[in-house]
Length: 500
Image 1 (cartoon, rainbow, N blue to C red):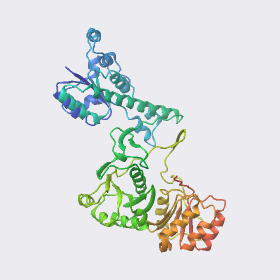
Image 2 (cartoon, helix red, strand yellow):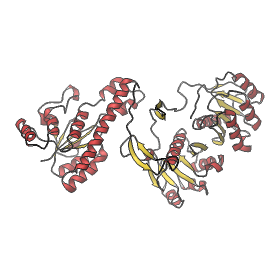
Image 3 (cartoon, rainbow, N blue to C red):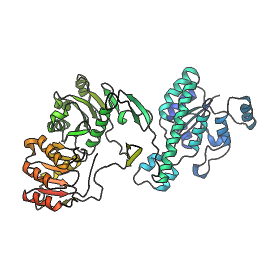
Image 4 (cartoon, rainbow, N blue to C red):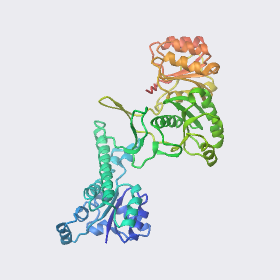
């Protein structure tokens, strides 16, 4: 009788996998919680402690670390190994399904205690995976619930997985233990070393330009692009993916329905409104010329009214948490418009990596102002309630624009954006030029302080009524004097938000 050892932390699909094995006549061995889950599904299962004759000890820290288990996994298909197993009264184990204690998930929690992290370091599970992967000539190893279905299908169709599939599964098991150990080592070493494990999602047609090759990777096996899935259109390009990631990150900052349009990795329109369709219209209106051929992200279901708000604008990609059926039907008629469904609340990254010649730069992500940040009105005039609301929108928006970021906002929509220039005053000129007459009565956000008063003087001349910036320049007093003379309200945040 074939025998499977099931010992999993993540119980996803376990009952179905166990039922499929049992239907094929397999004996099921399981430890602790896995055995309980299988029994709850009505399956016959032998506890590992009954199989070995040795109880679980140390509160479950030692369950599967026993010669009867590991000899059964590591036994080769030789007469000598078969005889030695028989002499000890042990049996072969033909399949091992293990996923590990959630160490990575535990340390991602902001308030995770060190003791909790240590308790979530798996020992027996890693040993089982390595043993089964080493002996993949005889044993099938499964370390991810996503592999249950293909393994079960192979067993149902041919009696056993092919040698090629067993080797592939073994490689995944070793990759998983490598990733797991690297996370533990980095945690204990406190960033003395890093180890990045990523899995190929798809080969891209090319990179930023046709002569460059490119591949998309994800941090989990089988992940979709940006953790989502493509609903329509041809494969996403390198530039589509980069732009969609940037725009999706921007709209996640807003509680209201919000839209961000990105072109060449630079936002060219952001807006929020009670109705998503109104946010679409306002984001386009910021810079309709640049919006052509861009990527658009929304933080709400993309509905038919939002499709109508696009009018005849060509967009390369629309990313949203969902699309209603009528909107999908309408968008199907748009040529070369990709639709990307992404999670409504993307998980915050723990770190950001950037390659430099000879190494990597690592930093924690900029997730907005820290909790202890305090805004301070420094001008003679305080902003009105309407200006204060617009400044809040502008301050969030400028954090997603390339430095030196300047954003002009009216109510909850950008009307002019300037960024990516080597000096701040050119970015102010660019934002004012795009805004045109809409600069009159707008508010301005700057991601960093003004090194000279010239930027504020330009803004005042264009009719800007309020400014928000970090402050901290040696010429803050000169800048403030210009603002006060123009009757402008000025708020300083004390926090800089460069994005390069």
